Amino acid sequence: MGAGVTDMSDVIEGTRPQNVHLIARHAEATLWLARYMERIENLARILDVTNTFARDADDTRNWLSIPRINGDLEAFYKKHSAATQRTVGEFYLLDAGNPTSVQGCIEAAKENARTLRALISTEMWLQINVFHGRIRALDSAMVTPEHFTAVCAMLKDGAQSHTGITEGTFYRDQAWHFYMIGRYLERADQTTRLLDTRFHALVPHHEAADADIDAGAWNALLRAAAGYHAYRREHPSGYEPRQVACFLLSNTAFPRSAGLNLAQAEWHLTQLRSRYGLRRVGTALERLEELNAGLSYENVARMVGGKLSPFLDAVQREIGALHGDIVATFAD
Image (cartoon, rainbow, N blue to C red):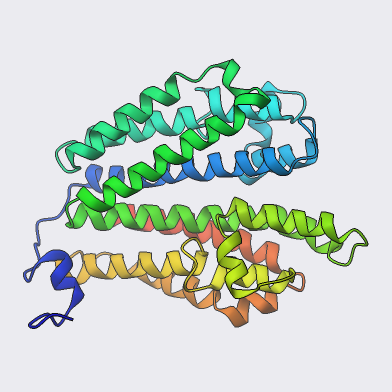
């Protein structure tokens, strides 16, 4: 550490805190901008992995897991009679009437960015507009099997470009803290949803005779969470349900583990209180402390035996409540 630097928060935000608070609509818009951009990347990755590992384009069980992860089963079946590569692709890549589709997410992200135009960088604003145009240009020809992987790659590249531009150009003030909290809440929520939907479908087959099929399913789960290579660094061979669950929920080095992301959200919220005088965050911090305690390696390992799904449901509810707590800090 360089001479005279005693606290990394001084490096990030200067030596004096600023006590001028964001207005409520800017704070909430910043949270949502981050969440919508994360959703696009997460959705593209899950679609791509499912397309790779599904037995064929009509593999209903695998394709149906995507509306299930997103809580969209009812909305999906109102428009489609069966879950296939074509119908799920249309629902999530083209359907502007579906708020969880990439069309719905990029539209909402752009509107939130417009609200924040005075706070976000010019580079962020321009990239979001270009990305918006590319997504809006998608048509039915792009969800065919020969184009599906390329479309998912474009979406992941666009979302990751946004992440990189944000990292390099977003001024480190209150808005940045709220943006990072939104990103971390969304990552934690998506990881728990993915694990909740796919984990228990895999566990009964852990001792199955066809080890290649079993390994492929675990492989798909980890790749859908962008965690396959990181998992292999810790566990070079084989898959053990407890190890997978603890990796996705409790690992402190994997960027998309629920535990790491909620711990990061807690740090940013603490900074908002200590450096900017945002005092009405006690409820949110208490909820975060309880969530982080519950996501310890020991506690998650105990849940794998049969209580994991109710536990993950509770974590998802608490993450939703946490978002509400943070927004409520600005309520009159």
